[in-house]
Image (tube, rainbow, N blue to C red; front, side, top):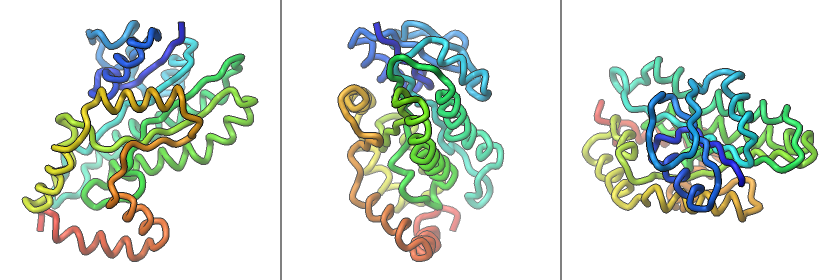
Length: 258
Protein backbone atom coordinates (compact mmCIF):
# COMPACT_ATOMS: atom_id res chain seq x y z
CA UNK A 1 0.00 0.00 0.00
CA UNK A 2 1.29 3.43 -0.93
CA UNK A 3 1.39 6.25 1.60
CA UNK A 4 0.65 9.95 1.18
CA UNK A 5 1.32 12.57 3.85
CA UNK A 6 -0.89 15.67 3.56
CA UNK A 7 -0.37 18.82 5.62
CA UNK A 8 -3.37 21.00 6.31
CA UNK A 9 -5.56 17.89 6.29
CA UNK A 10 -8.35 19.67 8.20
CA UNK A 11 -8.77 22.34 5.52
CA UNK A 12 -11.13 22.41 2.57
CA UNK A 13 -8.60 21.22 -0.01
CA UNK A 14 -6.61 19.01 2.38
CA UNK A 15 -9.61 16.94 3.42
CA UNK A 16 -10.74 16.63 -0.21
CA UNK A 17 -7.32 15.31 -1.25
CA UNK A 18 -7.38 12.90 1.69
CA UNK A 19 -10.69 11.47 0.47
CA UNK A 20 -9.39 11.27 -3.10
CA UNK A 21 -6.36 9.21 -2.02
CA UNK A 22 -8.39 6.99 0.32
CA UNK A 23 -10.74 6.16 -2.58
CA UNK A 24 -7.66 4.96 -4.46
CA UNK A 25 -6.64 2.67 -1.63
CA UNK A 26 -3.73 4.74 -0.32
CA UNK A 27 -2.78 5.10 3.34
CA UNK A 28 -3.41 8.75 4.21
CA UNK A 29 -1.43 10.41 6.99
CA UNK A 30 -3.01 13.75 7.83
CA UNK A 31 -0.86 16.46 9.38
CA UNK A 32 -2.59 19.02 11.59
CA UNK A 33 -2.13 21.31 14.56
CA UNK A 34 -5.43 20.05 16.01
CA UNK A 35 -4.87 17.29 18.61
CA UNK A 36 -8.40 15.85 18.44
CA UNK A 37 -9.27 16.06 14.76
CA UNK A 38 -11.80 13.50 13.55
CA UNK A 39 -12.96 12.65 10.05
CA UNK A 40 -13.12 10.10 7.26
CA UNK A 41 -10.39 11.74 5.18
CA UNK A 42 -7.29 10.21 6.83
CA UNK A 43 -6.08 6.91 8.29
CA UNK A 44 -3.50 8.27 10.73
CA UNK A 45 -3.03 11.65 12.31
CA UNK A 46 0.27 13.45 12.77
CA UNK A 47 -0.14 16.33 15.21
CA UNK A 48 2.59 18.84 14.49
CA UNK A 49 3.22 22.59 14.87
CA UNK A 50 4.83 22.47 11.40
CA UNK A 51 7.62 24.90 12.17
CA UNK A 52 10.98 23.24 12.82
CA UNK A 53 13.48 20.93 11.15
CA UNK A 54 12.36 18.20 13.55
CA UNK A 55 8.75 18.71 12.43
CA UNK A 56 9.86 18.30 8.83
CA UNK A 57 11.80 15.12 9.55
CA UNK A 58 8.79 13.64 11.29
CA UNK A 59 6.86 13.66 8.00
CA UNK A 60 9.39 11.35 6.39
CA UNK A 61 9.24 8.83 9.25
CA UNK A 62 6.03 7.55 7.67
CA UNK A 63 8.07 6.40 4.63
CA UNK A 64 5.74 8.18 2.21
CA UNK A 65 5.52 7.90 -1.55
CA UNK A 66 4.05 11.39 -1.78
CA UNK A 67 4.18 14.38 0.57
CA UNK A 68 1.73 17.20 -0.16
CA UNK A 69 2.52 20.51 1.50
CA UNK A 70 -0.95 21.93 1.45
CA UNK A 71 -1.09 23.92 4.69
CA UNK A 72 -1.52 27.59 3.94
CA UNK A 73 -2.65 30.80 5.55
CA UNK A 74 -4.65 33.70 4.14
CA UNK A 75 -4.57 37.34 5.17
CA UNK A 76 -7.86 37.35 7.07
CA UNK A 77 -7.37 40.75 8.70
CA UNK A 78 -5.56 43.98 7.89
CA UNK A 79 -4.37 46.96 9.88
CA UNK A 80 -5.25 50.63 9.70
CA UNK A 81 -5.49 51.91 6.15
CA UNK A 82 -5.11 48.39 4.78
CA UNK A 83 -1.51 48.02 5.93
CA UNK A 84 -0.53 44.40 6.70
CA UNK A 85 -0.63 43.26 10.33
CA UNK A 86 2.96 42.40 11.29
CA UNK A 87 1.99 39.28 13.25
CA UNK A 88 0.23 37.94 10.18
CA UNK A 89 3.21 38.79 7.98
CA UNK A 90 5.46 36.68 10.19
CA UNK A 91 2.97 33.82 10.54
CA UNK A 92 2.01 33.67 6.87
CA UNK A 93 5.60 33.75 5.65
CA UNK A 94 6.40 30.84 7.96
CA UNK A 95 3.37 28.75 7.00
CA UNK A 96 3.22 29.54 3.28
CA UNK A 97 6.92 29.59 2.46
CA UNK A 98 9.56 29.10 5.16
CA UNK A 99 8.41 25.78 6.58
CA UNK A 100 7.67 24.18 3.19
CA UNK A 101 11.19 25.25 2.16
CA UNK A 102 12.59 23.45 5.21
CA UNK A 103 10.65 20.30 4.28
CA UNK A 104 11.95 20.42 0.72
CA UNK A 105 15.52 20.84 1.93
CA UNK A 106 15.21 18.01 4.43
CA UNK A 107 13.84 15.74 1.69
CA UNK A 108 17.15 16.15 -0.13
CA UNK A 109 18.95 14.41 2.75
CA UNK A 110 16.95 11.19 2.39
CA UNK A 111 18.37 8.02 0.91
CA UNK A 112 15.65 6.56 -1.31
CA UNK A 113 15.33 3.30 -3.20
CA UNK A 114 11.99 4.39 -4.69
CA UNK A 115 10.70 7.73 -5.91
CA UNK A 116 9.36 10.39 -3.57
CA UNK A 117 7.29 13.32 -4.79
CA UNK A 118 7.16 16.37 -2.53
CA UNK A 119 4.32 18.51 -3.84
CA UNK A 120 4.00 22.14 -2.77
CA UNK A 121 0.54 23.63 -3.22
CA UNK A 122 1.12 27.13 -4.53
CA UNK A 123 -1.32 29.49 -6.19
CA UNK A 124 -1.96 31.19 -9.49
CA UNK A 125 -1.50 34.34 -7.37
CA UNK A 126 2.25 33.69 -7.49
CA UNK A 127 2.36 35.22 -10.96
CA UNK A 128 1.87 38.81 -9.90
CA UNK A 129 1.86 40.62 -6.55
CA UNK A 130 -1.16 42.71 -5.64
CA UNK A 131 -1.75 45.62 -3.29
CA UNK A 132 -5.01 43.88 -2.33
CA UNK A 133 -3.28 40.71 -1.10
CA UNK A 134 0.42 41.51 -0.75
CA UNK A 135 1.38 39.09 2.04
CA UNK A 136 -0.30 36.04 0.53
CA UNK A 137 0.96 36.74 -2.97
CA UNK A 138 4.56 37.31 -1.87
CA UNK A 139 4.62 34.05 0.10
CA UNK A 140 3.37 32.07 -2.88
CA UNK A 141 5.87 33.78 -5.17
CA UNK A 142 8.68 32.86 -2.77
CA UNK A 143 7.48 29.24 -2.62
CA UNK A 144 7.40 28.99 -6.42
CA UNK A 145 10.85 30.54 -6.79
CA UNK A 146 12.37 28.27 -4.14
CA UNK A 147 10.87 25.10 -5.63
CA UNK A 148 11.99 25.99 -9.16
CA UNK A 149 15.50 26.88 -7.98
CA UNK A 150 16.18 24.11 -5.47
CA UNK A 151 14.20 21.34 -7.21
CA UNK A 152 16.83 20.58 -9.87
CA UNK A 153 19.57 20.38 -7.21
CA UNK A 154 17.53 17.94 -5.12
CA UNK A 155 16.54 15.84 -8.12
CA UNK A 156 20.05 15.27 -9.39
CA UNK A 157 21.69 14.92 -5.97
CA UNK A 158 19.16 12.18 -5.11
CA UNK A 159 19.91 10.33 -8.36
CA UNK A 160 16.45 11.21 -9.69
CA UNK A 161 14.65 9.69 -6.69
CA UNK A 162 13.24 12.89 -5.12
CA UNK A 163 11.14 15.34 -7.07
CA UNK A 164 10.06 18.74 -5.76
CA UNK A 165 6.96 19.59 -7.76
CA UNK A 166 4.46 22.44 -7.53
CA UNK A 167 0.75 22.72 -8.20
CA UNK A 168 -0.98 26.09 -8.64
CA UNK A 169 -4.75 26.09 -7.97
CA UNK A 170 -6.87 29.21 -8.00
CA UNK A 171 -9.98 30.12 -6.02
CA UNK A 172 -11.76 27.16 -4.44
CA UNK A 173 -15.37 27.36 -3.30
CA UNK A 174 -15.63 27.89 0.46
CA UNK A 175 -15.39 30.51 3.19
CA UNK A 176 -11.70 31.24 2.64
CA UNK A 177 -12.41 32.32 -0.94
CA UNK A 178 -13.88 35.47 0.59
CA UNK A 179 -10.86 36.34 2.74
CA UNK A 180 -9.22 38.68 0.16
CA UNK A 181 -12.20 41.07 0.20
CA UNK A 182 -11.01 42.81 3.36
CA UNK A 183 -9.35 45.61 1.34
CA UNK A 184 -11.98 45.96 -1.38
CA UNK A 185 -14.64 48.60 -1.89
CA UNK A 186 -18.11 47.72 -3.18
CA UNK A 187 -17.14 47.85 -6.85
CA UNK A 188 -14.11 45.64 -6.40
CA UNK A 189 -16.09 43.34 -4.09
CA UNK A 190 -18.47 42.55 -6.94
CA UNK A 191 -15.55 41.51 -9.14
CA UNK A 192 -14.37 39.15 -6.40
CA UNK A 193 -17.92 37.91 -5.94
CA UNK A 194 -18.05 36.78 -9.56
CA UNK A 195 -14.84 34.78 -9.11
CA UNK A 196 -16.00 33.19 -5.87
CA UNK A 197 -19.41 32.25 -7.23
CA UNK A 198 -17.84 30.51 -10.21
CA UNK A 199 -15.09 28.79 -8.20
CA UNK A 200 -14.89 24.98 -8.45
CA UNK A 201 -15.60 22.81 -5.39
CA UNK A 202 -12.69 21.34 -3.46
CA UNK A 203 -13.36 17.74 -4.49
CA UNK A 204 -13.08 18.67 -8.18
CA UNK A 205 -9.80 20.51 -7.62
CA UNK A 206 -8.47 17.68 -5.44
CA UNK A 207 -9.20 15.05 -8.12
CA UNK A 208 -7.38 17.12 -10.71
CA UNK A 209 -4.36 17.56 -8.42
CA UNK A 210 -4.18 13.85 -7.52
CA UNK A 211 -4.50 12.84 -11.18
CA UNK A 212 -1.75 15.31 -12.05
CA UNK A 213 0.56 13.89 -9.36
CA UNK A 214 -0.02 10.33 -10.51
CA UNK A 215 -0.09 10.71 -14.27
CA UNK A 216 1.65 13.89 -15.35
CA UNK A 217 5.35 14.30 -16.04
CA UNK A 218 5.11 18.06 -15.46
CA UNK A 219 7.07 19.73 -12.72
CA UNK A 220 4.60 22.60 -12.34
CA UNK A 221 0.89 22.08 -12.79
CA UNK A 222 -1.80 24.74 -12.97
CA UNK A 223 -5.57 24.64 -12.58
CA UNK A 224 -7.60 26.79 -14.97
CA UNK A 225 -5.90 30.20 -14.92
CA UNK A 226 -8.00 33.26 -15.80
CA UNK A 227 -6.80 35.26 -18.78
CA UNK A 228 -6.44 38.35 -16.61
CA UNK A 229 -3.99 36.55 -14.32
CA UNK A 230 -1.89 35.57 -17.33
CA UNK A 231 -1.76 39.17 -18.54
CA UNK A 232 -0.68 40.53 -15.14
CA UNK A 233 1.89 37.76 -14.81
CA UNK A 234 3.54 38.72 -18.08
CA UNK A 235 3.40 42.42 -17.27
CA UNK A 236 5.06 41.81 -13.91
CA UNK A 237 7.84 39.74 -15.47
CA UNK A 238 8.49 41.91 -18.53
CA UNK A 239 7.58 45.43 -17.40
CA UNK A 240 8.00 45.59 -13.61
CA UNK A 241 7.95 49.39 -13.38
CA UNK A 242 4.76 49.59 -15.46
CA UNK A 243 3.22 46.86 -13.31
CA UNK A 244 4.05 48.80 -10.13
CA UNK A 245 2.37 51.87 -11.63
CA UNK A 246 -0.75 49.80 -12.31
CA UNK A 247 -0.85 48.88 -8.64
CA UNK A 248 -0.52 52.55 -7.69
CA UNK A 249 -3.42 53.31 -10.01
CA UNK A 250 -5.52 50.36 -8.83
CA UNK A 251 -5.36 50.96 -5.09
CA UNK A 252 -7.43 54.18 -5.08
CA UNK A 253 -9.91 52.59 -7.51
CA UNK A 254 -10.56 49.35 -5.60
CA UNK A 255 -9.68 50.07 -1.98
CA UNK A 256 -12.27 50.71 0.71
CA UNK A 257 -9.67 52.77 2.57
CA UNK A 258 -9.67 55.60 0.02
